[in-house]
Image (tube, rainbow, N blue to C red; front, top):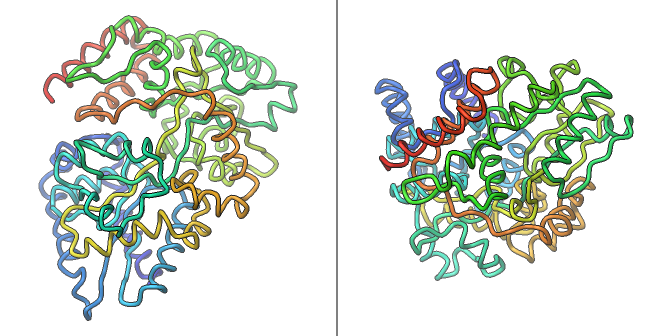
Length: 462
């Protein structure tokens, strides 16, 4: 059954990738993105999903569910195996595993939302949970927590709060992680270059210069994916980016953010933006650190998250060891944080809502399931599950756990509140503005003023 499902999914994703050519937005709101895809595409996709929804729960009295997530191949393989285990333990339940890359995931999910055919179980991101919950697209899990169907007793209060919106619980932490600077340790060791935890920005710039001077290898600072990086960066200046229908702070506060790109270009150590024209931005497998074929197209580091170390190491060329440290910051303690790497949610309108919650509970709390998942999404949120699987973790995953517990936890601050409606459009604007700086179409000062003004226009309409 899994092979048949995988083949069908491949066909769906092939069509989606053709529609996405040309670099469509990866972070539009559910309503905006669905409209942008056009009535024909929306009707076709919604019709397909409606048919699947109509079939759910009706095949020979069984319970058919769809679980949808984004991720790398490691996540896809482990999650599918965990769902296979659930099916074995629950005869009569069939789960269709569907997955996509980051961009395709949100484009397709917004179309599902427009067609009122949300997946039964889905991955949800901190950036989108507020708007999806307030749009009535996610199930409030509070009743299931209260009756014990969903056991959250081993999850900390702060972690639970990250998925709580207006008093309802709409998302459960799928794993705890932290921002992580992944770097080519082999390259740096060979050239006598060291990095330390909790680097300041000035120390980071010094490393960038040293790597470039000794090896010719350059640096990638979240080109095209500056969303989380911008919030992290601004926390050093006591700026929580989003306020009530506006951006907090001033335009001048944003000059240092854009200046880092200008500085890197002026000094030669920042990757030229043309490098990203031929790769899939955000893909672990095509990240310049592991994909670049020459010093001019390689980066010595990647600003990712701690739970992506294993995938990055798996994508690295033979003989390259990937190291892990904290993202740099002007004030490392103010900027750094622990977060839910992503959430699991239940889509509104599920024909088998209670069974979907049971699947979610299984993925969160079942030790057997987590011995398959092995913390790929981050350190398990339930303390007892995290403790149970730690001895079975690979050396890399144990390194991540130690990084979370020993490096980040003692040197961080509470995470920002979930981003409000409009944040995704602001992030699209931010990435376009960074691109303009990197192509020398705007100075850092011009970019800061333009971005701040235009972002406030977006937020004022929400």
